[in-house]
Length: 316
Image (cartoon, rainbow, N blue to C red; front, side, top):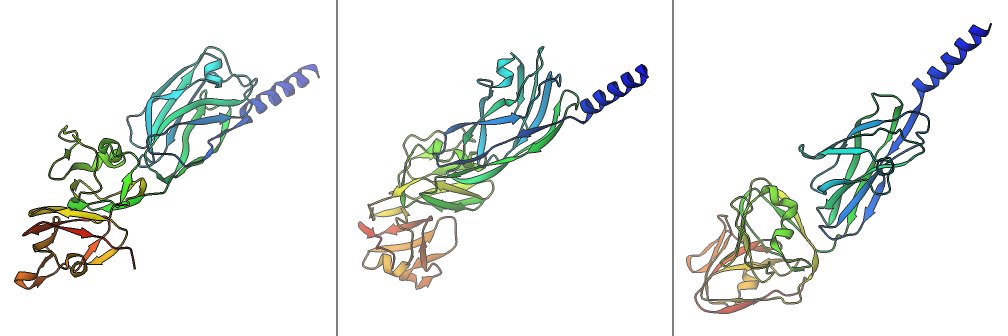
């Protein structure tokens, strides 16, 4: 009888050990922060007391258009890993994921934050799921119940540019809150081959850094390796006038409107208006018109016979 009771107790104990489940969770994060803000994302767990947890590992996935890992990629301050002196290792080599592993000599007691992952906000207006996969305590015991989370940044003031692959022309009707072109183009840097106007160039591929900040009073040539959307954060420019010199001008559209070419160019002594990297033109002296509209977010080449200026009226 005594052996039977002992056997039953051991069986029940092992059964409890094998079937123990611990919740592991990611938060739902809602921000309204500038691009470049550094955040910490906690990975939290339930009570681990008595479960002899001496190691964990997982893969954390995210959208790198919204968040990018920021070295050293993790923090153990105020976490179970830090309190127990555990070693944490992070591998960021695979795009859109972090591989995390940790171990220590002393087992965890209680619950709380396992580790904090460090990221930099890569867009002013966007969201991404935050997901855990391949999560294991020890070699799989105790088992885990995963609760995934999300991140949203809703600092959405400004202008969104939709840019095709190849060469095109861009401009902005907002004054960027951060006109440093390296920071402005960081969210699409992996796709950016070149952006330049007549006086300033930036090319991360060729190691060319801009000598000047972004100017909303200029249009820009841009070349992307694939299509992208780019948000420029800031307030609408109060200056709606572009001064034109004799010869070629790279002209921005300083309004969130669409204008008839004839309306904007009326009274100006010009030769031709053409798309940047496009075939459409407005060429009155040759009776040729395949370009009819000026569109917000784009830039246009205008050849002037003499100086002049364009004023962009309020939207009708």
